[in-house]
Amino acid sequence: MNMSLTEIWVYLAEQPLLWLALTVGIYWLAQQLYRACRRFPLLNPVLIAVTAIVLLLTATGTPYHEYFDGAQFISFLLGPATVALAVPLASQLDTLKRAWLPISVALAVGSTVGILSTLAIGWSLGLDSQMLLSLLPRSVTTPIAMGVSDQIGGSPSLTAVFVILTGILGAAFGLPLLAAIGLRDTVASGFALGVSSHGIGTARAFEYDQRAGAFSGLAMGLNGTLTAILVPVIVWLFGL
Image (cartoon, rainbow, N blue to C red; front, side, top):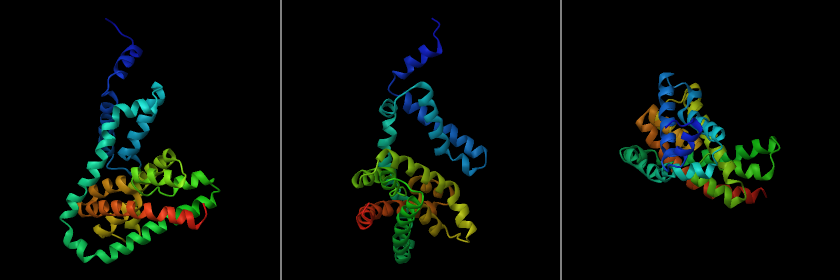
């Protein structure tokens, strides 16, 4: 029996694994494009995949909650994937023990400067209060950032967008910028990516070097914890 494309889509849209399969497939294609173009920064797989999925949802008139119902298994795996970042770090314990002081200082400075610079830029652009509060936790992984945003009166949905954009920009331009200022140490480079651009930056750090990826994962976790403490304090100090 002949079926139109619309009828085929309506049938497929009723299948629970459709959006999971499409998300994985689109990301795989984005990775192939990224590699074929010699890892051109603006073709980051996350950016391409997110853009493609947004366009597909818009074109098919699919509500986000319907998409998430089908693809939520990927969201579930974020937790185990984050915990698994401790595995490569375990092989770097000797370096971690030797460098705990500079790592602690870098974490404190990086987290504080990230939050305060965001606040300053937001004020200079004249952002309203909710937009500013949504922007403050942008440098940490999405679940933590959304939780912090909700706690301080921001919009978790806006925060998620800012987090993704921050990660993509960090992954695309972080390493070239660090190289341009003469920083080529893998531990320092990886830690900087983790502090500034969370999980997406960490994925880029692993592509660059295993040690960089391990310390980027450490920085991502520590910065998430510290930011969850600092942001409410800074919001209170500045009366936001």
